[in-house]
Image (tube, rainbow, N blue to C red; front, side, top):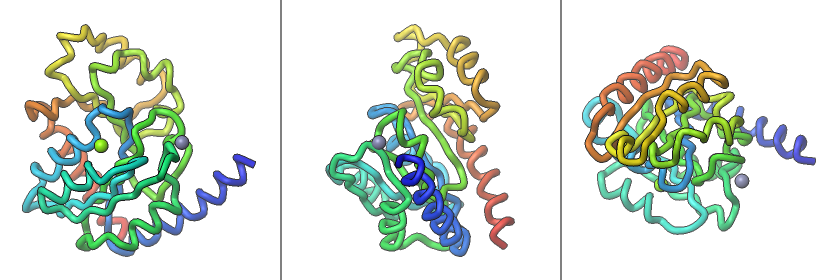
Length: 216
Ligand code: MG
Ligand code: ZN
């Protein structure tokens, strides 16, 4: 039964992907725990890429428009999905939300998934880039405890670098855990101080260029 649900979801995700490609969007499925800094990373990215790359956001939350309001406040196109209890986004929710998104062609589009390190990993949304953000405050054991989130990921962002010392974040252990599962890029940032945001936006824009070539 779950297999059927997932394969139906995969078909719809492929449709989403075709529509995104038609508009030249590069779409990032941004996953991570509640409080890891998904919205903060999006807001930092919008500020860093301002005047270079248009950024739009599909916000996923169980309830509220808090994150969508924060994105709208900095002038980026945004639509909010409220799942009403479901702990992940699926391709159907994204299909409906994307229809209401007024993003320029060529935009970088973030889909901020529901805060959760478990089932978002199983639902394709039509994204080009799968990203997970973790706060150093969450500890170094997450790749060991939630391996599925890391096996098929393009980039791992470690946030809250400014707090890593205070919480005794075991960086080597974390990297060892990630490397056992994936060769994905690992980028360390602090959304609070801005440290590492350049490396993140450089990585993103390199991948953006490739997506635009693909669509051309
Ligand atoms: Mg958020
Ligand atoms: Zn779920």
